[in-house]
Image 1 (cartoon, rainbow over the protein chains, first blue to last red):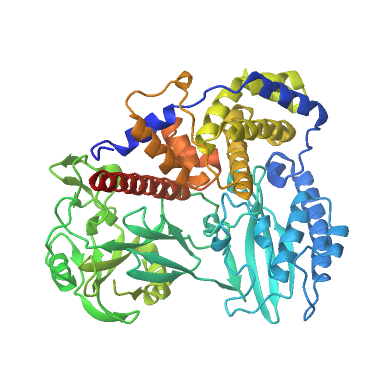
Image 2 (image 1 turned 90 degrees about the horizontal axis):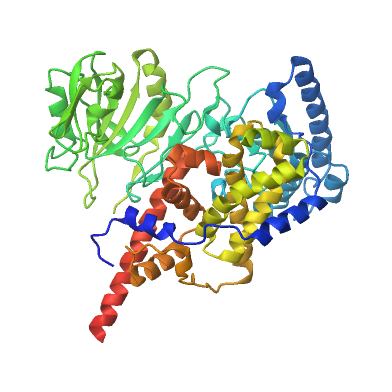
Length: 416
Length: 183
């Protein structure tokens, strides 16, 4: 196949081929089966938003009663020190409440306590078993001895999903997790960002559990826990960034579709640049050179770089402040799209771009503050400089820097 | 019109649902086939999806969103069919080259064979994203909505799918080159 052919066009041409019609007998078969099939009544709490307060409270009370029954059933199921069964216990299913969710949750938790079979309860299209943290044991590897759950009411989750809070006990250790189900789900779901509310998706003894992330082909790993929300994937987005969930109760859930614009961010950049187009160039040569070019730029209110030790590596730390509305120029590609490895791209107001051309975008600074950690990449690495930036408005900067400290400290570089 | 049919179907009107099914069935079949790459499996998935939609249609809040809602059910049905297939067969039946389905003349036979092989190596979840984005032409946020996964996951699957396709095509090309050289 010619290498010059555009992959997108090939995919489109390939997908254009194939059947376009459902055969008539198939419609008839559906119609025949419809005659034998009853429509389901709607029982999901995703309709509560349409109900009056009185009915909501009534349903909530009923759900709590149902949950208590489920909880008692589960906690009376596999006993501590006993030999748990891989199958949902007879008592768990016999006295399970009528809700289909509760039946599934009973089975799911019994399997987790038993140490096998929980994957069968997952909506594998959305939640791979590997993505479900602490499925059968605590962070220290202790197996669970009992479990309980309760519905999490009062939040309208995306996709019409319903949330349950599950608790698993291993001696004195309590693991608490958010588990979701939905009207179209084929099983239970885990959402590692918890849809970005103030409720951590997984805690152990009340502390959010950190997940491990790998970047730049394995040359950098870090650990991040709620309130940081992972964004992008290991290989899709550049820069790689995390968002900080806003402080305070009642933070509304969000999907990744950008409903919330004011995220504070932690951004990873490989070979960041101040000027130039999107192509990596020879400059700056190292972290010190980049720090110096930032420091010497009169438009940037940059502090003097300070040598610090982060995650076992030497780094230069500096703060960069550009007043809101200041005209700045950032690297762009031929189409005028922002290059994400530009240091100033992180504080560029994309809604106020004034000029595009010749590989640059000219516009205004957002006024966000930025803390930069600049590292020299290990010998043999494909990059020269690794940068971590924490970006937030002045009013939230201190909190963002403080919250980022454990993430930054967890950074480890690995030899290529 | 659809909203009226949906409302009637939600009240148990089988005729109304039948009409809905017939208006949406062809697109469903086109989607399912392109995800599953097997006519019979696609037919089964569409039937399952339509029947599921009938049983669950009372849970549909916005009658105007019948089609996206149905597509999400269909996608899950495709996943289920694909999982079932993995259980009972490892054999892959190649797509028969049926001109009645309107081949794109820009693709050579070699292109088509290589793409078919490469496409089948993708996960069914990756294929679904490609089909909604490249076949239906939906923007990524709409794909996320249609499949019922976060936008970030859609982007990730799309990226990995295209990278895997590219790698697969390049591997095929290398293999065919080395065969030509040894001949």
